[in-house]
Length: 327
Ligand SMILES: [Zn+2]
Image (cartoon, rainbow, N blue to C red; front, side, top):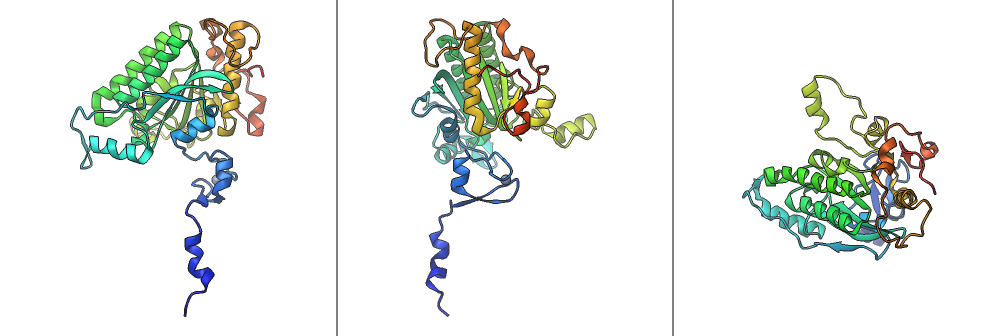
């Protein structure tokens, strides 16, 4: 029997991108609803992994981001072969898949009018792993923020150091932290945003070295995986171990901020540093001449772990260990 016309065409007529399934609550979500909510599940608030392109679009003011060092690419210094595939081929494949040349992207842009140096990892590019180029681009972002006296915001999403570059990858931990030390000496103010997952050498270097450490809800943040730790200390770890929520409780992160509130929260923190520096709020984009940063004594991280919990904790807003910055 011939298929009815609607039957025959039904499958073909539904584009594959119309619906998405939430990996957390298993609900089927209309893709447009997911897009409207910055890829956050409307049922359970699960934060879907997003590309660096969306991260920039969701965080930085439209048409203000000027990306730098786009063409910088890694080299296969060790002739490394991973599961039968040469590293340099993996680099080519990752670039084709993601549309970027490496796992780190940075540049200058505005967040609700505040000029910042902004960088983000691209997790789809070899798991956001940090090799020489990622380390170099992070360092350049830090040095640009130091030289231009701009706040620095870096977003982490990483499996850690890139094994394909061996010790050269591990050296990036020291290199980025050295640059951050100089940034700090010069009075720099930086914010780290840890998204799912932030692990290994990225956690152990620049992602956890910031004035304010923000996490997205539910993000896995840690150095070694729980199995390795359990095997070492011979103890069962808590079920929520290494989640953003667990780390907020322990004072390891300062705030948990839902993605849809990230831009506004960043703008509040950036405004707060201006208030600390100038004693009164300034219009975003105003050039005060000289540093827009707090002095080391004004470091808002000074209260980390001991400040009052934000009242917004109970209504789905940002959860924080910091005092509330002035609106
Ligand atoms: Zn869900």
